Length: 404
Image (cartoon, rainbow, N blue to C red; front, side, top):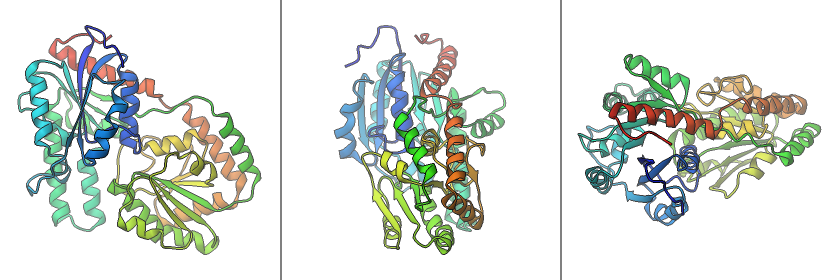
């Protein structure tokens, strides 16, 4: 158990899931931040859980990094006047817990990961609030409505409700932060008198000699035709991307390379993703204990997202491991196209994948470019440093304790 230092800033971190096991990009981010943040702050964790039994069982894994871990069940609301993301994360128990902690004066700062959790705080919180947006949710809601041609329907209404609620949450927060420069700029333009911080996801820069050897072997092999898409499929944009790839892109690839395999690897695939596994050449694994083998045996990694924001941890991992990646523009947000192939049209996406499958030299060159580029990206330590600056800015507004 960590011994928390007297005088450390006391932070209440509010999340929409337990950050363990780190089976999604959001969980991985929060886990890595907690793992390093506790050296600087006294952290209490409050989670609103949609998998309550599993999360309560796993809470013990985070006690080395937190003063305490409180997990409360989400109690989804049917209130049609609330945005869908807010409705999913209603929890009277979490609301009462946060109010009690604040009333006791046990924290100096509240850090909320996602605007849709701000409603859990009392109307007049007596400490500064740092709101970190992993995505700008109203932009995602708008994209969903456009893709479904439903701007005038229920999805369009959800977009309008989301925008109103999200902007209100930004105004309520003492300090806001985003994961990408694109999202940071949107927040800054909306609130021109406020400084908006950039708190990116991180990349592990440690060398991987075994992986380097496998990349060298891959460069000498003929294409085996294995494509990998990694995602937490409980997150609807990943499920949409899997279906989009199978319906619009994969048939174009198989027309040229009939024996190509597609692996959809990740947590909680819904029925529409499980059904994709009934097609020849497609494997849906569900949650796996270790992604290493899947990355190692893949020729091409794809990220065909049509909805999304922020930096995708799965993209950072693929770059770090020196994989050849083809992505949509949305999948490449926060990274750019220096070390990946960015294609948005289905036929162009398919041609890019085919080029890499057929040509092992091009595949190896792009993979090496990806690996080198990953070494220029922020580490998790850099991410924590940026987060601490956001904390310090919030605490200075309130005259709270200095960070150590």
